[in-house]
Length: 288
Image 1 (tube, rainbow, N blue to C red):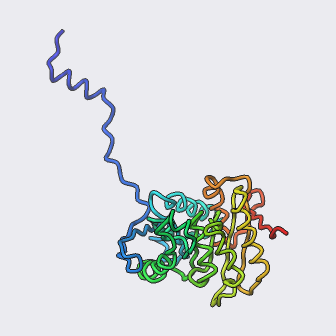
Image 2 (image 1 turned 135 degrees about the vertical axis):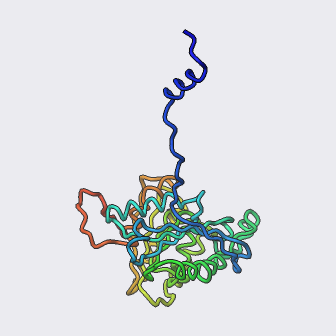
Image 3 (image 1 turned 90 degrees about the horizontal axis):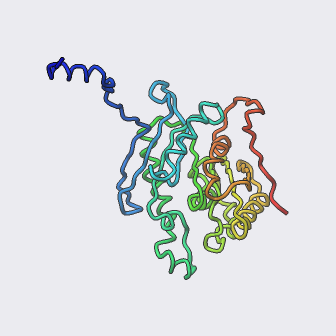
């Protein structure tokens, strides 16, 4: 029997898979563009809000993330903060991802090393990047979001170098600091050589520093060891620090592995965790 074309079409449609509803975009935050005077260009700042921000009415600490672009560390660090809050391992925080463009320009201090300047002619403008954060990013955050006045900063490699420099030179910019495998070897470890003097920089409030390094050896480990020795030799009321090296990791793997621990140290909770959770932080003494 020959069936009409309309009937055949109806049978085909009945056998087809159901039409899916239109997908709904997933939103994890929002992006601001700041016309920065210190940097002389437009810069991108990404913002992640805790899961209950819209309904709680609470105010939150702020975590500033250096290298916080969407193609940098914003996604994995915001995920880490969410998981830390879920486990009550660390407090829920507002994440401010500050994207970098020319990392050697923005994250390194002044240098007079001709070899470095020849190879990286734009290097040495961390002071301007710090001014951008202090004078433009922080006021924007304070005016737009419910913050509780507590802040921290996190970053790895050159961003870690910038964070250590800020901790030493302008400690009151943030409350808490996490420097993960910082590039302290940069400029022949000049920052570390100046650390003992810089650790006398006046402080108006308490500060906490989390410092870690992977299995990097050589001048990188030596520079980190010397910074730890300087911290130990210059104790100061209101300044706490934890050196928690992870020699089982590499420069490429350490950030994702230790960021939960870093956030736990920066933004602890009053919850007493079961030891079986594995949330202990093994702070070490400096090497002799």
